[in-house]
Structure formats: structure tokens, C-alpha cells
Image (cartoon, rainbow, N blue to C red):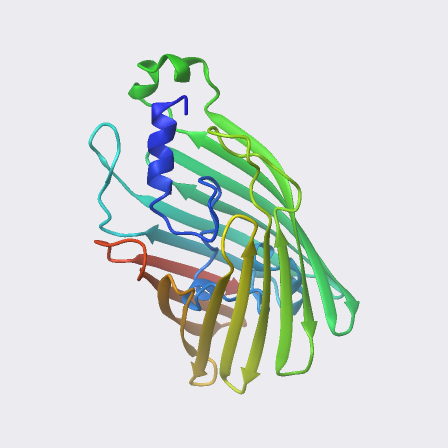
Length: 303
């Protein structure tokens, strides 16, 4: 506990509920449609965010896809930093996925930021078919974290000589098994290569195992996930989605029993290019008060 500014950063990060206890590179979820279904996505993962949720899901893409998302976390949450300013939390993602017939590749950049601190995850993913009904995939993740330079640092003798950045490298693996046209099962193991990304202790990022099931009933989709974190109790997630108007309007809801989520999608095709606009609202029900929830917005373009 050597740096007051680091401790303040950890306190701010701790206001964001996640599925594991590490104060750094927390599991905040990626994208908008997945989060609108409570983060239950490991058995579906059928867009460019699969590089995060389950790289094996990239094989489901039929066309190249560009994915951009913007999120403000816990609006109206009055989290003050040392100089009295109110901090805010942002989480953004840019990804591109490209199917290659018997395989698929993707790359992405996940960016979390506050006034004091920011994190960057650069990911490269690839997926292949092992069997006609079984796909596997892997993701290489380059992690970079930085404490922002500020007037406070010059007044702290420890921080003046300390490195304000951390870098690391880790791996994820995943698989999807199609039991039938209606049912599929998914699995992901995240952070399987040990990596330390913090300033306060020597604990590596936890290994997180996720198993899930997706059930298609016509235009209705049901999703169930179980998340096993070595530092946390088992977490359960549920999500549902229904599409109307010939797949042009989708509505969804879900929960991880800490947060209620909902959202919608609008699709439009123009000159063979498909545009999709996604929105999700995440509202905490067990951990944070005095917030208007988290709002996420994404634009997806399929070429």
C-alpha cells in the first residue's frame, strides 16, 4: 500500500461490480447486445465481440464485420478524486472480424478510462473447425494499464520515481459445440497464462471459466451461463432475446442477479451493407445506489 493515488484509484475501481476481486482489468463485459442479455453470451458469441466472449464463435460470422461500442458506466455516481473533481467511467470497444471459410480471425481494442487511470486490451483471435459440430478458438491479449500523470504525483515521493504503467500478456481459449440446430453449448477459459497487472500486490489476474447453453426456439433465444472464478463464488447469468419484423427489430433482457439488463437492436440493409444499432441499459440491484445505471451503444456494420 505504498501510493495514496493508487489506493484512490483502487477505491474508484471497486465501485464497479464485477465477477472477480482483482482491482485491475475487471470483467466489465464487452459490447452491447451481450450485456443486454445479462452477459450470458459464451454459447452464442456470434459477432465481432466473440474475440472476448468466446473466440470459437467467430466461425458463425457470414460476412466481415466492424464493431464499435461506447459506454458510460454508472451515470450520476458521485465518485470524487483527490482534487475534488467527480470522476466518470468509460468503456469502449472497436473490433473487426473476418470469416475465412474454414477459419475466422478477429482483432479488437477494449479501452476503460477514468480521470486517474486507464486500461487497454489489444486482442487477436482465431477460430477453426475441429469437427462439423465443434469449433475451437483462442485469443492473445496484450494488456496495458496507466496511472494518469497529475499534479498529485509531484507531491508524492514514492510516485515520482515509480513506473506509472504496467504491461502484460495472457491467453483465452474457447469452444462451441452444436448439439442440434436449436441447442449449442459454449466454454471459455480466460487468463490461462498467469499475468500480474497491479501495483498493490503480486496476485495475477484470476483464471475465469465460463460454461453456457443457448437454446433457439424460432425467433426466441434463451441463454444460460455459469461463471467460475478462482476468487469468487459461482455466478449465474440468464438472457433472452426476441426478434420482430423479419429480424429488423430485436428486444432483450437478462440478469446476473446483481444487475438487471435490457436493450434493443435496429437493423437496416443499404446496398447489401447491413447496419445494426444496439442499445443496452444495465441497472445494479445489489451493490451501487444513487446511479442512473450504465448505458451502452454500439454500431455494427456487416459488409
